[in-house]
Length: 238
Image 1: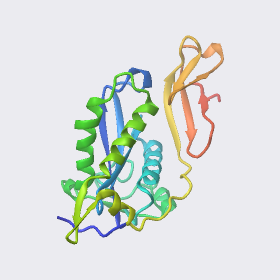
Image 2 (image 1 turned 90 degrees about the vertical axis):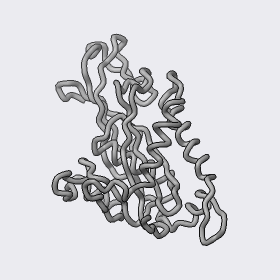
Image 3 (image 1 turned 90 degrees about the horizontal axis):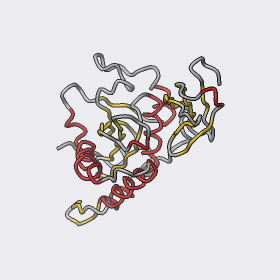
């Protein structure tokens, strides 16, 4: 057992989920970024299409706000978007993210995944209890809302602390977390094929493009914190 003072650490990991609903347009795999507070065992999660840096930063921001704030440090395994897996050195692209949220970064040594055992247990719940029961026709927004409800429900788990009964939720509310800053200005990019009706599906919405782009591959680009989506053609034209 490893002691975790309140507010000292959040643990992070991705979980890969097979066969998401076809209506999402994500292909054969969906991903969930899970963040957990080891002191209280509260965890929250965010559905993502990919695991690149943009989706990671978006997931970190979304989960932090669901957890109630930012802990002092973040713990990862050798996640390739965070560090160089072989050397364990922090990636240049991730350092500004850590500075923006004011956190230190800890990396588990190879073969020491048990150092983030709380988030591993949360992943077990997602794969064995939640994903298997999700309806095949669930929308992306509906699936995220369902996942959020599971997380909140599990805040009612009972715990003993200093010989007194309590719950995960009560312990989590007592953790000294800092308010989350404005979202880090990362960019989320995804590829889409334009339909024959000149429409593109992105996160539950359909966007139209000129008819000449029908059946072509395009890139949708969304900067976190903004309210717009840029659509870029294969030739790089906005």
